[in-house]
Amino acid sequence: MLRTKRSVLVRRLWRSRAPGGKEEEEEVVVAAAAAAAGAEVELKALTYAALKRLKERQLEGLLNAVESRGGARTPCLLLPAKADSRLGQHWYPLPMLLCKVFRWPDLRHCSEVKRLCCCESYSKAHPELVCCNPHHLSRLYELESPPPPYSRYPMDFLKPSGE
Image 1 (cartoon, rainbow, N blue to C red):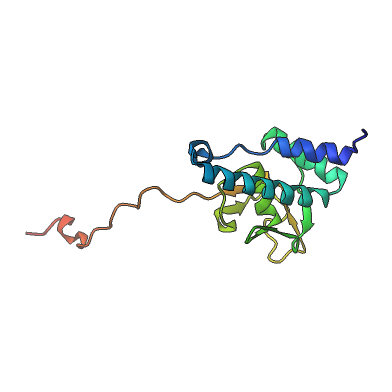
Image 2 (tube, rainbow, N blue to C red):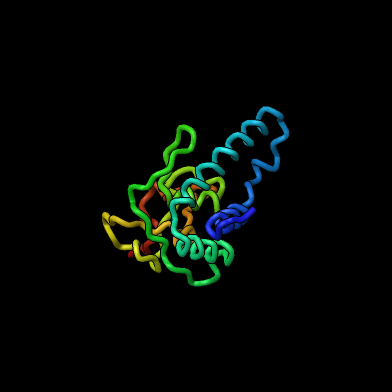
């Protein structure tokens, strides 16, 4: 059985996906595991469909970025900005889908990532092409604890008095 280079690249990319989070490891309930397996199959189908749209050279660049885990300087993966993907009831922009598959499986919203300044799409307001390289994005994390409260009283009592 002959396989094309594109299908080999897509298969290698799927094998290079990020491992699941702690939530997936701790699940022991059969119903939850079945639902997770269904979501995994759906995610795989969506990822394969998105990757099949890429050209062979783009697949090689993405594979290089994913296998080096951002260690190698990789080019932008420019794709049409209108190329969104649907997973179940959720719509994902293509850059978010690739980040979810290859970097952060627990990514929930595109507001959790920010484009790095090394990317060609960094300063463009409304680009026709957007970079989908998952290593050209950085994740924004929320603080685990709120900042300390501010003083409610003026700091006048700390000033030296003239008395």
